[in-house]
Image (tube, rainbow over all chains, first blue to last red; front, side):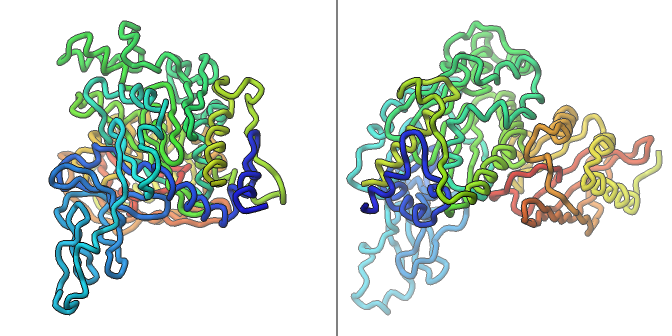
Length: 411
Length: 158
């Protein structure tokens, strides 16, 4: 069996082999065949709010800088001086007109162009600056989401996202007409494989089990809302490894049902907003403030998850970094944005009421995966219900992701 | 009520550290004023913690909910919790708000779980106020040395 067929045989429709979590050779192949071969999320446009702003990010294992140049154009540049490979940026985010390599002083502008080389006479005619810009990746955006790829010949981003675009549009409605901005991020690592996290965003089955201690911290009305298995939710395969998991159908379209009663937990916020906003405006903001009722899983590294972006970064076969990026209404009322921050802190992050339990579960998957010589990870929940939609606890979203994994690894 | 001195503040802070290491959360909750805030920032230089994302931004209601969760037996990251041993030192009186005795100190927590030992270092700022019982906690800000970087799931209190 050739290598491609061997990979394909490890990801069946109803199960994947444990070596997908544990084999360093498979991890290295994933970096080549998947992360270096498709659209990878690197930023949200609001993280680059002005000309000459930048943030550090990654495409697979490769460190990149996302920049907005003085003409407001976005660029994604490998964070590596063309001279002797030193990183040219070590500030996570900021503003600059130049990246100056601190090793020998080569300087690059925000488009990546090499502008100056100290003591250039030493090169004689050997060095043409135009030949040594920072390596620039292809960049495309959809609804403020910035993606980059190392490939110049793959399909455009919009085509890659396909039917996921309509769900992304719905997700962005939580900007309540103001637009979406990143309002801070929690980052944490867990000693486990990146796909364990990828699966989790489309795993409603774990929610009432793992997150019981979160659920018991809520008022009765809100606890009812988070009964994610009991509201007629569903999962759809959106193609190319993407999927959507609808847990709270009432919160699919945040511009609908504006006349519904305001939930108890948002009454104080509504009263505060009513001092400065018209009643219909208050309803629009309050309806959006808790986020949506669904998770969009975008293969391979980002999710638009209820009220935040979940970004995963593979580090090693058994090490993954997660960012949970809080979202706010850009230019929206402070009271609403602070409410969103407090809601995010309640569940997410290293000491949220939810994330540490998820992280513990993922770590235990990796620890358990050390057992057995030839065992499989089951993905067959809801398989009998057909391939396109299932009940919300079905593992259909995971099957969609692994179908893409198989396609890319078998190329 | 007597004024707070640096030695009495140190004694209070050591007690608080011991209550947290021994998971005596009911006694820990009783140290606080009703309006106090327990804060663990993600941004080291924030001017107004309420306006930015934090790891923890707890008023009394959230502190009580947090303790309930840690003791519920329903949270797998907290049952069992990692074992912790913390040392608090390098105390220095600081300028604080009116009526507040402010102390900054260093805290090292050593955490153990699943064959692994980790260290969490932080600057901690306490705002203490006199109370009938001696001293009450008005504000605690735990600025982790790496609070703006990737952390890990933490199933206890800092």
